[in-house]
Amino acid sequence: MSMLTWILAESALETVPEALWRHPAVKHHSTRSGKPPSVLILDRSYHHAAMKTLKYGQKRGRPDIVHLSLLEALCSPLNKEGLLKIHVHSFGDQVISVSSQLRLPRNYNRFIGLMEQLFTLGKVPPSGQPLLVLEKKTLPELVSSINPSHVVAFSRIGKPFTLEEAVQELINEEKPVAIIGGFPIGHFTDTTTTLADEIISIDPEMLEACIVTSRLIYEYERAISVPKKRIGLSKAQSPSLSSIEEFSCRTRLPA
Amino acid sequence: MSMLTWILAESALETVPEALWRHPAVKHHSTRSGKPPSVLILDRSYHHAAMKTLKYGQKRGRPDIVHLSLLEALCSPLNKEGLLKIHVHSFGDQVISVSSQLRLPRNYNRFIGLMEQLFTLGKVPPSGQPLLVLEKKTLPELVSSINPSHVVAFSRIGKPFTLEEAVQELINEEKPVAIIGGFPIGHFTDTTTTLADEIISIDPEMLEACIVTSRLIYEYERAISVPKKRIGLSKAQSPSLSSIEEFSCRTRLPA
Image 1 (cartoon, each protein chain N blue to C red):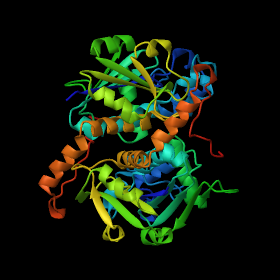
Image 2: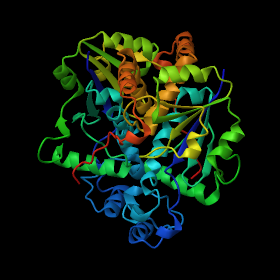
Image 3: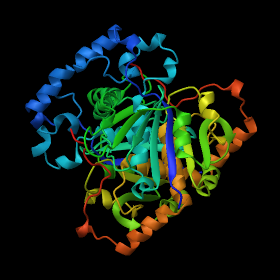
Image 4: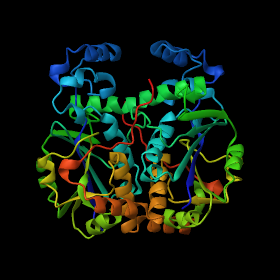
């Protein structure tokens, strides 16, 4: 059974660029949070005024997109089955490799704290087996290192197919890669689109990255019978009300 | 074509209970945010220490669950097609009726601000056609007012079925209702389970509410051919790169 590689590309996740460090909106946020501007994650909610003159500003400063999409990917049964490989490529050509074992904070502010730590130290946790690794790497470099047999990118301006049709092609590949945009508005750059064997549109309207992520992963699970297999297992085990233990895909990161 | 009613039940969303107002963790949060304790939304990220003695504390104080699940519901094509009705029932027996037109803030802190406004004023926006309405109402009262033809609740200790099987039953109903738990741990109360015609488990492990929500809605769309219909529309329109306008399910709420 093939493992699916999921890449959130051109994601709106980066630290505040140096040119904005002296802007009042950034200084205010820095003072309030007690952290230097260089450490802060660019966030339109706080830095909107500062971002007005930023190049490609509309595509940047939306770490919430990465947060929600990562939650959908990490908590999926596909990931629990060890059949999902997760990468986040950022606007500034950095790549985060995410361990399938990572239990991502649900709380947004804690997620931001984690990203600040990652962008400062390059990995999290700083010692031992890392769950998150940040490297300077372009998207072509990342894709080339994966050596995929087939790459599909999802974009509203792609060829219209249902997700079911798109996934049917992916599951027959040896090393399928799916690329989803991790930005709020606009389209992939040419660099990204040239990496894709196919660009597919699954809806005439723009869909949120987390929605495309959750549907893609579910459809992939469906196509390789993960739900039936897991439910079959469940039917065999027939859990009773009294013997239930709580499961969760969360585990705590070192503080 | 039947409209699906989605209820997030026993959701971990409420204001800080009066008994906790004087706890140092709550007072600290109140000072930092510049808001009185009575207005604050209970949140384990800030009030963990205060929640230790709280009755059913483990099921409470997780507004992020409501935030993510609502985003999945509101941004879905099913909602855009006008085929989804959205209610959030809270731990404290309050019910939020959510307009399908609502463009929910993506940023968690802004979402919390919105919920504080809602719990203070009872509706948002305060004047004109409300997009969110909060009422004191039990779950049985809510379900009875919907007068459903069939109610399915999703729980890990339900009968094992794939979501596909579960949804096949729902689409043939005149007024189907799906209940998903909006809490982090534990199970539905007896009050909730007795409302359901069926309790279904779609995975042997606990799944996040937002994951069950997105999958349920997608599976429902699939079963009534929404993706094919929308993509067919898209194929007919055949958008070109040059004629693309941005769509988004976001619209701003009055500040």
